[in-house]
Length: 387
Image 1 (cartoon, rainbow, N blue to C red):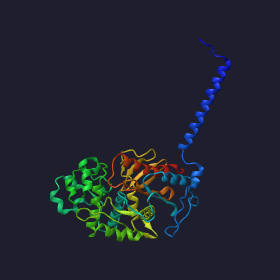
Image 2 (cartoon, one colour):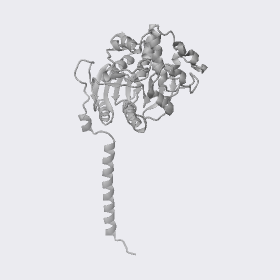
Image 3 (tube, rainbow, N blue to C red):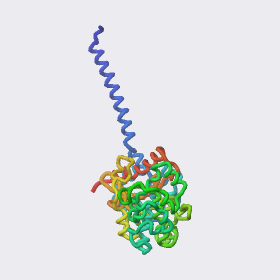
Image 4 (cartoon, rainbow, N blue to C red):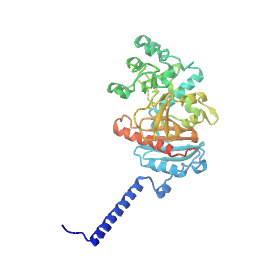
């Protein structure tokens, strides 16, 4: 057996330490690259609002918001595949704005289930106008022509309140292939007869597009008009919103659950109004107590599918979500693909995200893209300081 000399051991030791040093440098460089944008990259991010007189404009720093956190938000947004726009309002000022891919300031997109939060506002307005008398009115009161066809007595007990809370008992349309096909073939009022309940009304949360659509029909019938005309008079016009296309069902009723086209600017007006307890530019559009009640949590952990590490402890109100990210909780109007209106009372902040609607696209890959858009917001909210 050959003996190793002291000189040989020394040479081997130097070679070994050299290799370790090189590996350490490579690993450190890799970690730095994975840790987020560099100072130079953040400095290059331009999120200054576009010129014009659409909104009062300020900067994050002037409104007490860390500019580096905002720069990181927009840097991360620029890496997303489907995002179109990102707006941030603080203390009533537009402090950050940018558009990505084919997005633009005037672009209107299908906001999908953000429509549900619009419908919720219209229910509150209808109640205030006297079209509706109580949230405890029964659903079937507004569908008398179908009363003799309803065989499940539980359906006759469903209230408007339970519908708003997604506790009517109708199933999530993505739970079976048959229901999924129904979602895309289209609803009509009689669908409330055809679709069986999966739980007793009022007992637990069950996300249902049909339920939200029926709410829209109830508003239209109770107020003796169509949903778009009612919305135009009592919500959109006072907000200065110009809605685009709005899909109707087989019998001509505007969808109460999806397929309304709005711009990021339109969504921002709606969000700012809700953050300000239903008031916009000095006009009370939605009753303040309705806004408050809408944003409470009536069902905890309503969404069962994991979104991300900072998208946690979700709940559901009157067609509004609630999410905790770190030490902060925000209200969320959420549509397929990752359309979002975000309300952060703690920071007097509104965020709007519009994205590729991914209409008709479902499955693992579209959900991955949607989660990325949802986590953009949740990760940013988590990064905000605790008071």
